[in-house]
Length: 395
Image (tube, rainbow, N blue to C red; front, side, top):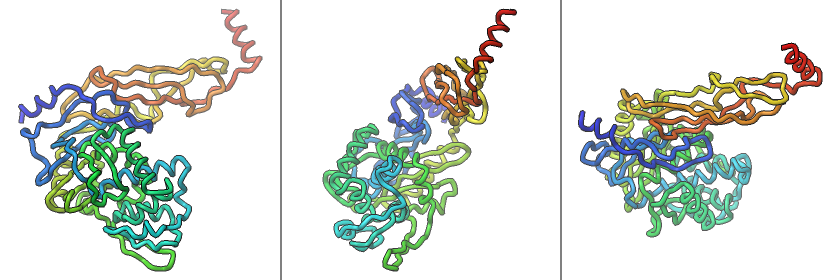
């Protein structure tokens, strides 16, 4: 065990993720904690596996992480990503209805039996994809976002490239068998990190059992395919997949003690083994690693920022969000900071941008956090400036 720990701590820094512009750590490199296959075997009866910290993307465990293989319905992770992106960009409204095409209603495999020609709420379609992996809802959403599934698939591949997923190619939005599509455990983890950054994902991911109500009064019972939301208390989201070609697959996340982990298991021999492997990896991650808060968005920084033209010459500032540093338990990384203030001119409102705080872990840039004003600063009046000049003259 000592040899394993020393191996982990001495592993060189590697690139371990992509740069997202939505609050993910601005990682250029990260400590590689991933074990060699011969050191530790957490994933049983599977072809590929990956475990990482959500916030930093640092790898904790990997097994054949970049082997290309079919991922079945785990492909819907990217489908959902694009739907949530479209909602946030205003090109898709989750509160409107879309008319289901004959093409969408004719999808096989897992489905909620949409009726072509009927209008369904976008939010209900998204829910059915997350909860019960509905293929018909996937295609209906793809057509709503891009006009056709083909155009949507092109966008899926474009976004995968944006994420840095070099071992991924999509041929449809459902994951139904097709020779020309594949991904890998590491890329799936990257895509799933992006998916759970959308807060609305968690509105649906923990639903266990619910009826899908059709506009014509029919109901279809939906049961969550991710059994871990009932079996593993820390698990609050995931996407399953199965075809004969892909085997049993699962991408999932669990959150405990300020540590959120992402696990990916591909090509398991049975449904139970994919869940067992995931639990093994989660247990290992929570037992051996931690996230320590180094910047608290409720606590003002020691630094202040000068304000020109204001009644106040400087204002207090604070981080816009929490910044945590991922590390092995017992390890004490060297954490340093570099504050880059912004030029401010009154008036300033609380919450206005005031600069950036760079967080370094062992000398490597780990995170960049926006710094905001913690107080208002009114513009100085003529009399304020006159009093200031008089005071300085007396001095």
